[in-house]
Image (cartoon, rainbow, N blue to C red; front, side):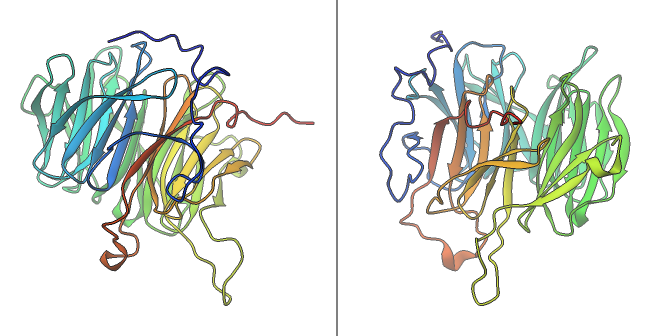
Length: 364
């Protein structure tokens, strides 16, 4: 793996994100070539333990692809793996040497990037919706959750899980930031888990949202301690929820991914497909079925930016380890059914130099 200095990334001399605007790329962002033959379900950047930036993406075409992103924003295709069903999630091992891939074929595989070999390390009785690596002082494990209504922790060296926890319903979204995990289920369930020592349920939370959960992302406080989560729903709304709110008013919800102005008295409301927190500023990005990404400051409760609309929904987003790059995937999310599936429209992954745009505004 080549080593790249991060300092020049998105700097004045780079060509990063200097594309011309087009119908497919209205935000003039850097396009990754040939990202997928079907809708993109998952994106994950390599961890801070390795110097180079690698991006992996999983897709409904059963493939997981890996690119190296150099400091001018150019993407270099590295490798690809295939599973027996659509990929629903991907995540990295903390040392940056392996990627975990969760599929509708009910399996999770571990892809060793050095040898380019993939081996099965986990299984469920139904498609695996999410996977997250857990790095604790006394154990390491892969957390998986599934539509089979279970949450499991795997040692990766044993065919049986270290621990299996029953969920009240099918898992729809999950996130981990040690020592905290949160799982959102069908029926608007939210369960918070404590991962130190041994994973155990911390508490169930009444949903602050009235509609189906679509995505969840844990955020940290100023001391870099995981302290709450943002939850997105199909009804163009995000809830900011603290695990132990000092003041009940600290928890709030905000509307997003909705059309401006009512047409015939109706407003178009779109699903929030993904939420990601900036690793340096603590601000957040949301992406939606309206084809837009928006950047927000939850502490000042302000919107920092909304993008131009892409020609298809944005299904997923991710920040790289130092928060210089924002990646987002544009592909059909089937939110309007099969009759709106246009095979002529391509799938895209775009990269954007984002560090300045996500800075909290200084209070005047």
